[in-house]
Image (cartoon, rainbow, N blue to C red):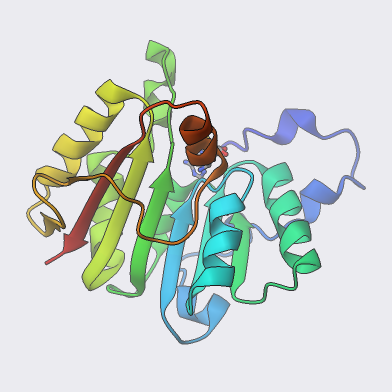
Length: 210
Ligand SMILES: C[S@@+](CC[C@H](N)C(=O)[O-])C[C@H]1O[C@@H](n2cnc3c(N)ncnc32)[C@H](O)[C@@H]1O
């Protein structure tokens, strides 16, 4: 698996090189071994880490984050340490590969993917995160009744993600067709906050495992 961040390293002292990485774990990954027992949640592609940190502060859960950019893992970890947040763990990796190795089934209470787009160019399509395969693994890892929450500000991506979630037989919409006006998780991502500040639409998709 290629590490898309490697071109930014200058020398071995770069602190970003030393963040916890899923590539240091061979084979199966058990989130309970990483985080201990309790209500576990997962965020894929946490970026600047605003949602994951707010969620950790505002909810009685433990949350794990996966991010392809080592620098963002480092920065989120530093901020979490300064805020003395202990119910959060962030690690480097490509979530598409990492969640395929996660066991056991039904380990997460909720899975979040906020603003995974854009991958506009045709050659970037292969980097898409909300796919049938990822959704299959998310569903496998969710507890029955557990939430799968996806947000975007791109209308045609929202339609695409909605179709993907609607076509998974193990998922059911929480409201109506699966779109929801509210983010009920008491935390917002940077992109979500920015879109709201600019008065742009935010498309929110919320399903739960049957
Ligand atoms: C557009 S940003 C959104 C960041 C944040 N979720 C937000 O809403 O502010 C997408 C993030 O997903 C990360 N990402 C993209 N593909 C990923 C993958 N396969 N696994 C983990 N993270 C990924 C990117 O590095 C980037 O930080």
